[in-house]
Length: 354
Image (cartoon, rainbow, N blue to C red; front, side, top):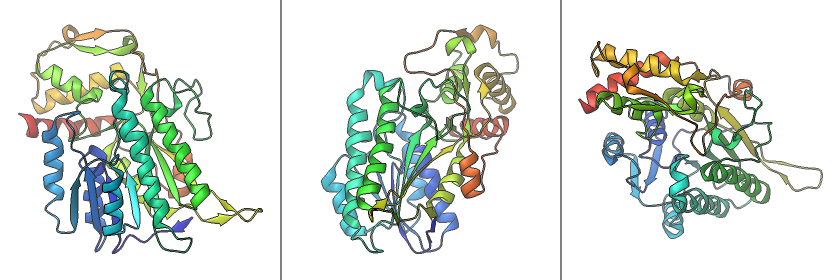
């Protein structure tokens, strides 16, 4: 792998007002000298825009942060950004997220996840002239959803992932295929990261832990799918960001094969906690932490507010990351416990909403 020095570099982060994007940029500013970040986000209302505004306001306090409001599906805009700022590193986190939403709103996924990612690949391609100039490393978000309903666990990046069970998963698998092809054709070092159920303070309200918290606080019933027989590899946001930062700084090597043509400098890694939690246990820990911080009262009747329901279309019964490749190549394994992560989330929730 080739070392990528971030000092003094210009980094383009798409989806910058999103949960992962904003936390990544905060970390870059904290750790990297003289770094400039160009952030793009369309600021859509898929979830509470106040969260995006709050994240963006914090980032905008930095003089070396430049924000562009717009969509990565706008090829002209993306081209203008590249021509003006000439980023050496690109982290593509912009995507229409959510498995269930993809069933009712497919257009949003094709626009952002396919057309948008294609535009990113194209500008990376045209930035590279065959020498040492241009984009040094493209890092992009994939998802544990690509594993579909694979029966073998833990999920390994060596597993076949040809049976997506949602459009969202299909678009993420497509991203990996496109990146591989562009890496092969144009020698663009790229790394895909399959994230596993990311959670934490100021996270996405469409995620289970956030939605459960809202409903419990409002005295509404929460629905636990597959009758509670689901397991998720919950991964705390700080662990995700630590993984991304380490990956950015090591790009796959540009090498030539026996035919004299480039071997694709393309890698894929899982970033997960390597410790799936049963949803019923997860709800129990969340409820205890909500009581601890005073979001809900100590005498709250949880059993009366829980409903066990069947599996939803597009969902899978278990997610479980094999992180051995991440440990081998980057010396890192996520380690934040679910209780610790949910404690930080509930403390933030109380401060932000109550």
